[in-house]
Length: 158
Image 1 (spheres, helix red, strand yellow):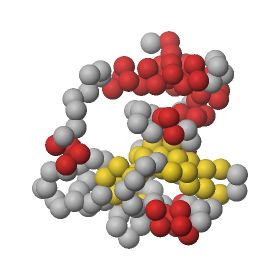
Image 2 (cartoon, helix red, strand yellow; image 1 turned 90 degrees about the vertical axis):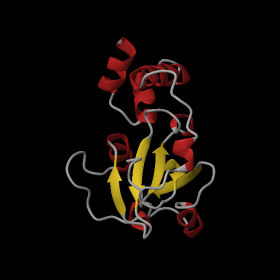
Image 3 (cartoon, rainbow, N blue to C red; image 1 turned 120 degrees about the vertical axis):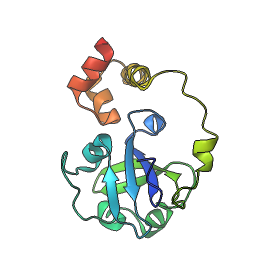
Image 4 (cartoon, helix red, strand yellow; image 1 turned 180 degrees about the vertical axis):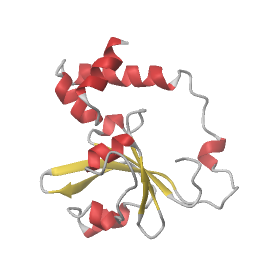
């Protein structure tokens, strides 16, 4: 998704501690608010179809429970903030990237530090931190990460 140049890139997760982890959900949103793409974690967190093309959705539809002020902040850079999805559920959302001209280098991409550990190791570490934060309750940790218990068990076993 980071190769898309004409979209806003948003990170979503139920727990704000996991926004900067490999287990965050990612949304690619056009300037007019239309949802263009979502990774597997975002699809699960937001109740979208797991496979295949996404339905035509706008951010207003997706975050119908959010206030007007929250919806205005969705495509604005800034720190992570809590956004209501509907009755009784919410996610934390962070704006990661604004649209840029095709071929232009993103300032965040140009200055991004080199990852010290491979993605798989980062996923394992995030799973361990989530299990510790949930005091060993793996069902709760999996829900907070937006992954299945089976996936969490596999990550902890590796």
